[in-house]
Length: 629
View 1 (tube, helix red, strand yellow):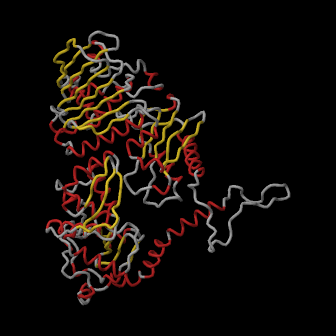
View 2 (cartoon, rainbow, N blue to C red):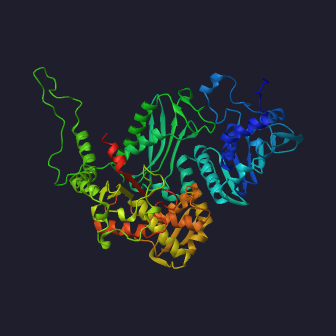
View 3 (spheres, helix red, strand yellow):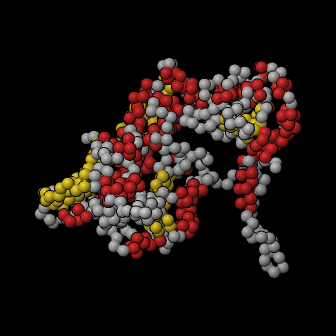
């Protein structure tokens, strides 16, 4: 048998690495800007054409490179940041893997002009798909000027799956925001298709936040600061009254590096637990300074996932710092002395003959009070379960009744006698292709609700469960889309214009879809920068906050999470439906539930939401019986 294992060519290996390191144009900007920061640059200019597809250019005034270093920089695993394995545990630079430039050169056409400070002449290097085409001496400015052209030109599948320019530009601006926040000692500018989007001078963190996200943040932020031998934490958190359902500004940094850390995010959220609604979140900008030896950034090529050696201890320090800041500025709630509170619990245990407490000192009456509040939140669910038990005998008799008896139910009491349940109900265990018949539905008067979210009623073969929020999304989507297509939408004027602000990335996205929003009844105008005015909204919208709907549309367009179709109109209709639909946990009356179900079954596709999420599920008797085996 001949040998079959062989080494991959460098060009192929670099393309494989590029799959992880370079995911989109924003990834290129991140890697190039971090290299500029590592080179000691104090001025960085970013120039973009066609959202990075045609050109990404980063110009800096860093230390520059010699001709030899310029050539070596594009070799895989070539780096000036580390020399031995131990250096990985004391990193003070953004880059260290030596993969970024090699990966970029493998999937684009690169031109580099660079000169070290004090040299009379620099070098110009051209690389095409990992192949060096030329290198020659050339006069140029100190620092580096890197041009990345025709990204993914030799990987058509990757280029094909890039999002539209507005989405890619939004991702670029989000990455720029993170880079600008963490490098406040650097002058930044970014332009797109010849238009300058941002230009910042070096400044403090708070000033950079205001420059990026608007002057209205000035009075919304509380400083946070603590210094311990383990970690130094500085930054800003928002006052509870300025929390938002979406469009939150949440940033964590460690040693000058952006990071994602769900554990620390949860710590911050717990500090706001009693201060803000459950569906809202605060903004925060928090910087951690720790010993580089106590963290590991070599987890993923993007270097955004970071492991802390003393994670639990830092959690406690962070929690204490956030609570201290909220308390110092009177953001914590006071004690409620309402009439329904009989007695404030005081922890004062009696002492026994030995002078010791005769109770368990771990007991905390406040903790018990917190548990009692949680138990109250479960009452609606418990009530529904008790109702299910009370009605079980009736349901059991209905399951045992003959199929013919179900046909005698008056049509006026059956949910939609015209329903085609072959489009909306799940397959049974016995026959994957057989579905419930309309005649097998029991009258809707038998339904119950669970957790104020699910509507449950019996059928001949078991139980049918409907998600009331998703059902309403389906109903509203069909209504909105039909009104848009029939051009039956008029604009409802607002007596007092409402002003709102978005992030730079959000403002860019809103600008790109503004024409379509105006066509369907929104009246929006720019106030300059990231500030916008709303003077009207579509008359078909129910009594909801139109600004929240705009933010929802912008958010889903920016993230590309609304995968409904290529039609912007349909995506906008779905975002409007999601925002206007009844919320999860909303309490509906019996009449409202019956009306919702009737509306759902009158739609053409009632089994799934427009973006493919299930609305209706069924549990057959066989599955129920197996629960008791």
